[in-house]
Image (cartoon, rainbow, N blue to C red; front, side):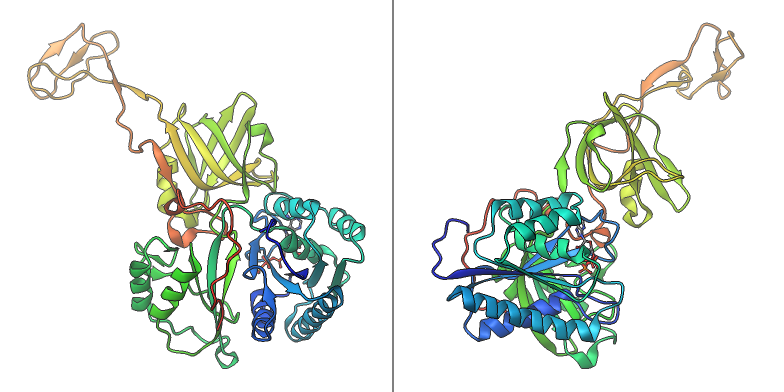
Length: 453
Ligand code: ATP
C-alpha cells in the first residue's frame, strides 16, 4: 500500500462517535458517503476501513468501532472540497441522530499518512491514547489536518484520528454489511436462518462466526434499533459477495458495502514478557503457572489465578462464555497456561483481572492423589482400620494391618491445547481458532470491482 505510486492527492477521512441509541450508526453514515463518492467516480485507494479500537476503553458503549475512507483527489483543493462535503453530510446525519453524550468527530488528513499517525492508530487498538497526544499530532500537521465536531468533548477525536492512522497493514479481514430501509428500523429483522446455515456451509472457512451450531442460532444480525440488517465476516471480498447471494431476507436490502477491518485478528493483544507488564486497559498474551485452585464466584464466573516470577494475577472466564468456564475450572495448581485477554483494573472487590478470551494449556501438571489401597482378594477399594492399623475390606473381610495409602496420578479432565468461548460469546477483535494459519501479512491494494450496491 505505502509503496504504490499514486497519481493525485491522498485524502483520508476518519469518523467516530456518530452512532446513537436512537438509530444512527457510524458505518451507515460512512457507507452513505462512500457509495455516493464511488458512484461519482472518485478513486478509492482502499475499501472503507472499519477499525475496532481498544475494547478495554471505559468510554466505549458498544464495539468501539471507528471508520475511515481513503481516496485520491485530483488536487489539494479538490481534496479539501471533498473533506468539506464529508463534514457537511456528517453534520446532517448527526443532527438527526446523535445523542447528547456522544462526541461525534470527523478528521480529514490530506496527503500520505505519516508514521507517527500510523503508530497512534495502532496504539489506539492496544492501549489508551490521551487527548493531548491526538491534539499534538493534529497541530503538528496543520493545515493538512481538518477536524470537525459539534461537541465540546474532544474524546471522539482519538477514534477518528486513529481510524485514519491505522492502515490495517498486517492481518485483516472483511465485513459485508447490509442495511435496512428506514421503514424497517426498530422492527424485528426478517432473515431466513436456514439460508444463513447454508451460506456458512457453502463459504466454509472463507467466512466465519456466521452461526452458532451448538445453540442453533445465527450470529450475523444485531439486535438493536440500528440500521444494520446483517454483517457477514470473511477472509476475502469475493467470498462475501457469494455469501450475500445465498442469504435470504424477508425485507429489502437498502444498500450493502464491504469494509476492510481488523476484526477477528487479535490486533488488540500484545505478548508481555511477564505478568507485571499486564497493565490495566491493555490487551495481553501472557504465560503463567496456575497458582491456586480455580474458584466460582457470584454470577457463575470462574476465576483462575496465575503467577510467574514477577507476580500473581487473576484471569476471569465470565458467565456468558458458558462451557469455556468448565475448561478453566478443570485447571490445577502447577499447570502452565497462556492467557489471552484485556486487563481490567482492580476495584474494591477484585484485583487486576485479565478477562479471558482464549487460553492455551501448555503443560498439565501431574496431580497426585492419595487413595486407599485395592483389596488383593476381591479388587475393591479397602477402608481404614483406624490410625496406624492398616486397611480392611468391607466386602470380603480381608485385613492387612501393614497396608498404607497408595499415591496415584489423577486422570485430568482437560487436555493440553487451545480453548475458546462459544461463537455467541465472541467480541469483534477476538480471533477465532479457525482463523489460525489464515493470517495475512499485508494487503495487495487491489479492490474488487463491485464492493458496494
Ligand atoms: P461503536 O458503537 O461505534 O462500535 P462505541 O459506541 O462502543 O463504538 P464510541 O462511541 O466510539 O464507542 O466511544 C468510544 C470513545 O472512546 C470514543 O470517543 C473514542 O474516541 C474513544 N477511544 C477509543 N479508543 C481509545 C483509546 N485507545 N484511547 C482513548 N480513547 C479511545
